[in-house]
Image (tube, rainbow over the protein chains, first blue to last red):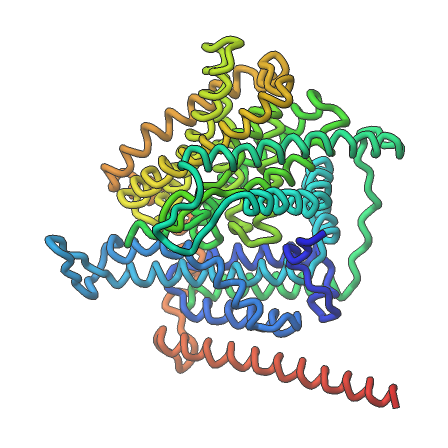
Length: 266
Length: 326
């Protein structure tokens, strides 16, 4: 397997790593919901939520820089909200004459844009911490605990098991294509073939990837049947939550609720 | 420059923070209902083979999204996969596979948000699959057993799955008042009409290989019938609704604003809760600026305290290790 670099999980023994995956998943969802419900322009609450995120990042011993670097990758979508600074009605801030048009940046527009960007930024940070401190099998247990159907959890599990195999397969296909086609850094030299031809090659690769996957799933099915699989997905009962986990869960939920209600006061 | 965000490679996955809570939750409910029904149908159709087949094919779709081809000027075409999944395994299995792919992308790779996951499943899984099923079935019915039905159907199914899903993203952003309808809808539709051509061409390429190697997988009697007429009608309805709603919304943004006002009742509902303590101020703190500064100081103190505590405990641990080795 070459692509273990895909797995964002970073083993560790920090308090966040040790926290039960179910508690982490529920708290991450609660945090993101809190950020979503926080009204536009409630700056103090955003600052406290950001402080919360940074605190968790320090406690997780992942390194704040690591999380922030990864969070930046999710930022380009923020530009989708950019037009809102011109269109939200309200007091004009700056007039930008562009050619024959006059673009007006409004104060509520800027507030809305910054709020959306902040919400998105802090939410993605918590999602990164969750993925980096929780192994996938633990996440599957957590999904089972929040009542995701067992069948769907089983499909998730099998997909994760073969994800690396198939990504490897895709990388091999791409390497084969690369080794058979010319490429140049000079911009005036076009990379081989017409557009339709290139698309067809990529399509052929996808097709053969799917065929191989179907055939592989046949073999996996045979192997599962040989080991006694009868179509029923069985799983061990969920382990109990420790007192510390319960305490963390209710304490953090209470804090988030307090933050949300205080959003009105500011 | 306003078009730039819509050109990014994966503008289809909405991150958290961009959808209003109400839009997110409604779409979660829709997605959960469709997933529950799909699980039931797939259980009947595939039986015990379903877990390995769908698990591995979902992984293949994830890996297949990496396969790309250069178009021009640094942009590249790549696969979303809803159409090819629908054609190969039927719509219900395709919905589950896209759910798994989008779910792993959100949970592990932060490609799309967790609260927004319901919306992303709805756009790429439900809408993408339903519309491509509708188009592919219709063309296969017209073409009968002739091979052009497979390829034309595959191309159009792939194209429409991209365009309609993009329209849905734009409408949801507009309803959440994140992106104005009269900019987001034409931009998303225009860009994805082109991206959809790439998806369609790759899908044709994939179908050509499968048609040559395993024609049994594409026989119309084998797959597709599992969808039933209800989904065919559903696909038609979704495609029609978005085709009618989008131009209306983008030419009359006020109409959508009105809907946004109406659906913004969550904000108004929250109003009374907050008015329990009207004009409340902290003693000595009379305005928002002071509150913001206070929050900033408070937040910094927490972070600083935690950092200090962690550093201290680490040092102690390291000293302990040193002592043990001595």
